[in-house]
Length: 368
Image (cartoon, rainbow, N blue to C red; front, side, top):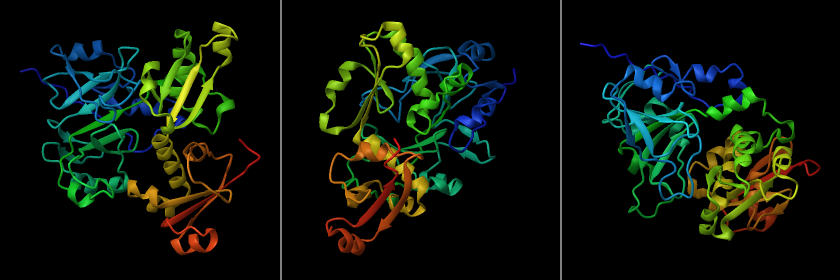
């Protein structure tokens, strides 16, 4: 009987940074049968697994109800082999390389730190026991049907009970005995390509434009589309999809015409990159950023619904509406400090009584 090679999945359990990719260390640490993600192709997998077949994949983060699809990999499609039950390989959108692994309920084996899991029996409380850091990582897009617990490299999903009212604050005790429905392991092949191509641009240092997906879009997508390329919440969408968005839900709009685009299509060309962020997406970004600056703030926003009870004050200005884009635009160059106010302090200093907390942010107004 032919002995099946075990799949070794080595996962980096922390945030993926550009610096970690300078020597392709990350790629070397996420492997399948000795082949690196973003280096292994479908053909490579088929050589060792002749029965490799295509299969549908339910995208748990960006479901069919969402406006766009993740551009890192071919969404909704994957490959499986009977020799590796519970594992689905998904290839990069624009090449044959594998950039994502989905672990299904059939997966049974060890995680890279040696912890054994059987996804048929693996509950949310088991996840929290193995990885306590995920206890405060409740995330979900408005269009998704799952709670997501993620560190950007590995994501665990639990089905949201839409019939449970109210949705917020989250009844965390209720979900503890719910099963983990799937696990995604993802690496951005664009980060490696961006590094190799030298797309690191000093003009965008300390902003989200520094992300490799932006450079992929700038130097790859835009040159192919004379009518422009559109990204909604960092997800590539068709121009027609934007008609579904309520204008009042938009936090920011940036139009980029890089010199490469201008040279390719001319200064009067409509070609360009359109980056649109919704208020919910901007909120998730500024919450993540401020959490990195203040443990007190990070503890405060453990419940996703708490933001409605917070009054934000930016440079002594009370923010009433349409402020999400302004807060999401704060970066290390501008940030000076953050302070949490109690309800009593909020009333005493600002005369605001309809909020439970105040978050006072100060920035350097001379820097962009």
